Amino acid sequence: MRKQIAAANWKMNLSVSEAETLLDQILATEHHLAANQEAIFAVPSIYISLAIQKLAGKNNVYVAAQNCYSKSNGAFTGEISAPMYASVGVKHIVLGHSERREYFGESDAFLAEKTDAVLAIGSTPIFCCGEPLSIREAGSQNSFVETQLKNSLFHLSEEQITKVVIAYEPIWAIGTGKTATSEQAQEIHAYIRSVMASKYGQSIADQISILYGGSVKAANAKEIFSQPDVDGGLVGGASLIATEFAAIINALK
Image (cartoon, rainbow, N blue to C red; front, side, top):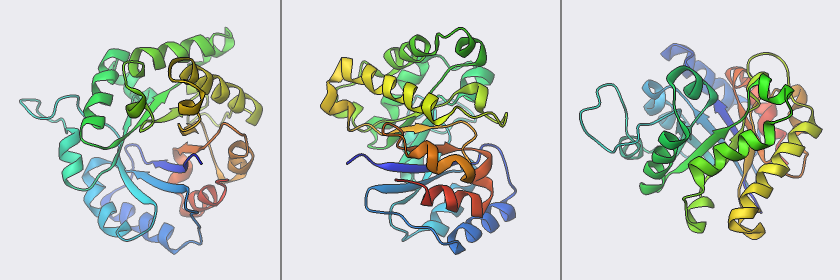
């Protein structure tokens, strides 16, 4: 059975007191995780220790980094490596978020290196892919996303690829209030799984969790997550509201 995941991406938000309050509020809400379900909190790196402390002892709850550098150490001022994150207890790292690609020029080749770095220390990459509005309007989203996956992930072995979580982001739906319909989400998630099957076989593809990331909120999470190839969500704005994110966790199938 594939893992079902509700992943919170706080992005660059909240003061330390606000972060502590939000974690306390989420812990106080009524939410339930089955054996095959996980809640992951991708918090700003400066709050990782706080989040790990707050969430310690909670079953199937993890703290993630929002990014890492491709090298393990060296003269790279301001960067944080995967081994550094692992040393403080981080087991998941988000890679290739559309904002990293757009604002910081991260290429498919660079993300392949980052993926290798995360896997090398035994952590889980949450690998983001997805198309902008112009590509969606042109009807080229499948080939666009396929290229991203092939360029960054197809060098991995069968054993390695099963340790990767894929997060599909329709960039046109991030922070815009627009959301892909559940049918649109299922269509491209199924296509992503078929792309992985073409390289690694159906049995391997069926083990890979694929998350939807585009304006997921409590009101639409259950419908989106009910689709057979949607295994949860990478949640932005709604993850900053305790009751919203708790409802999203409870929407996992």
